[in-house]
Image (cartoon, rainbow, N blue to C red; front, top):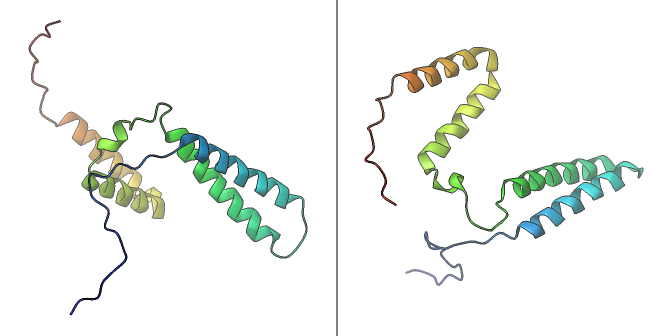
Length: 126
């Protein structure tokens, strides 16, 4: 027996639009909140200042990353496997950079120089 659910399942091909102006305004509002909480006194002020600063910086970075015309950039074509590998590599390097940075550079150099040569393309017709 299954119970009815009120959750909606999102489709894979569903497009989500992000309002760049709204993200920028929210980032600015959080950063202003961090500055205002800097000049206030109290026990919980440091917590709110930290929250506002971190959220404002992350939203500001998102605002900078969003394209101006509303179209997705090249980063939207990254597969989930490549994204997972990049995130895991960043986690490993941040945990012990003196051990893994030389290994990461060696693997990147090997991948760059040992890949097969590019095939010549036919000339374009205009």
